[in-house]
Length: 305
Image (cartoon, rainbow, N blue to C red; front, side, top):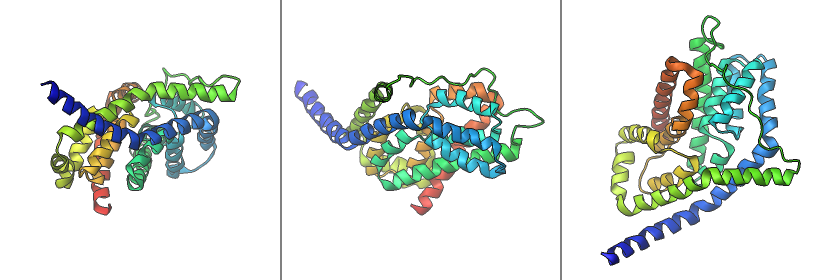
């Protein structure tokens, strides 16, 4: 029995070590870049969003709003109070929807992590998340009006104040290092857990099973990936090792795209905050939109990639 346990430990450690060596540089680079953007560029990005209020872009405003949402380094609990302040500046709900959805799905840190999956997966994730944000803005505009129906606003920001920055140290170097430390504490455990889970999958789940579930029947694989993304996604960095293992075992790129949309969009902590600002009816619309968008993105990607 001891020999069996030792053998399994050696196998799992072997997979863990390989996966860690492959992913770790991207995790470190993501931490550094995320902290750099947060400390040195965050205010510029957010001021760029505020400046949209004075421009008559109409429906096209969803495009820069979605791009700036991806560039924003904040998590959902930081994005919602920020969006509340944007609303007070006069940013319409359709542009806010584009900003918030793309911000939930992607940020500079996660972009770097995703590079570990290869340039194709990185491009697929970036484009699909951007289009998901733009489409959300357009739907809010044309289905509900740019500020909701009959003067009612789509979002409920009454309970949220503009977020206070934690990067207040007078020394720029210390400001950056403290932000980097918070990033490491927030994501480190999830990252290592993701690598460990990936090692377990590689050891005990046959590659044929991954192909059958996520790659063989492409429509079924996309739907399964979109569904699995809901309970499995806890942290962006933690899921990259899993995706890397699944892609190497036969997961289709479309299934990966679906997982990368439903995962962050339905993360439990994100849903709790979104439920407050959307209300019950709009919250249901949001969930339906995410599942449909993820499935559509996955099917389209499988047609072209």
